Amino acid sequence: MNDSAHAIPSQPDATAGDYMVSALALNGQVRAFACRTTRLCQEAQNIHQMSPVAAVALGRLMTGVLLMAEQGLKNTTDTISMIIRSNGPLQGMTVVGSGHQTVRGYCYQPVVETLYKRPGKLDIGQAVGEGTLTVIKDLGLKEPYMGKVELVSGEIAEDITYYLASSEQTPSAVGLGVLVDANGISHAGGFMVQMLPDATEETIQYLETRLSGFPEVTYWMQEGFNPDQILDLLFGDPQIRYFPHKPLAYTCTCSRERMEQNLIALGAREISELAQDPEGINLECHFCAKHYRFSQQQLQNLLAEMVKPRPD
Ligand SMILES: [Zn+2]
Image (cartoon, rainbow, N blue to C red; front, side):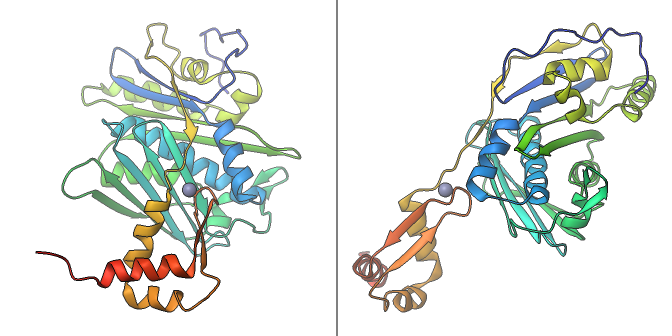
């Protein structure tokens, strides 16, 4: 890191939970977001029992989605989904975030070989491989917004930065970090910095210099710094203005009704095939691993409902 004149905040971090903070810095020319996602990444790990590379990749994408949600969603009912489809061992991931500071997600191949870039540094880019990043924003309008880009490196932060620059014409810097040790995920978090339209060339230059030597998020977290302090260290701006913290959580929205809707979407022929099995079927939610049992009788009832002529 470069030695700046700005004093490092020395207060240890007292609040242990996951949260998002946003801020305005450098004379209101830059908007910034930072978050700690350690617990929700641990929760995803408990649900999905992923190998280290998968846990880190999913944790980075979930952290990125939460930052994107904070930046781009206005209503609590809005959602943003990020879908990676790729040719590496992980094959891809789906993550959904809401305007209510919740996130959920899963990796298509949760258990893969541990790949290293160098000793101690997991190779996420190689585990993800080449592919695409699709972003779907449902803002409660008639049609959801959709954008798609090729992956740049599969390291997630670079891919999101590229997406923001090319699809949304928003120059940004994104840092994401998930650290695993022998006991599992120890630290996770990230930040996103965006130039506002009136940012001067001088401000852009200043920030580029600060960013170029800035250590990884997990380095600061290991040292005990919280998201506010990380932004403080990044900007070196005594006038930085913080907005209130928002707690973050891993939350699934699945329900029996939704599972039924998914079944209905398969179509009558598919359901009648499933209804042949006297054992019924057992559906598992991809996001939270909760099981939903449908007995043969329940499937037959569902089918009867579907083929019943609708009253005009
Ligand atoms: Zn669920």
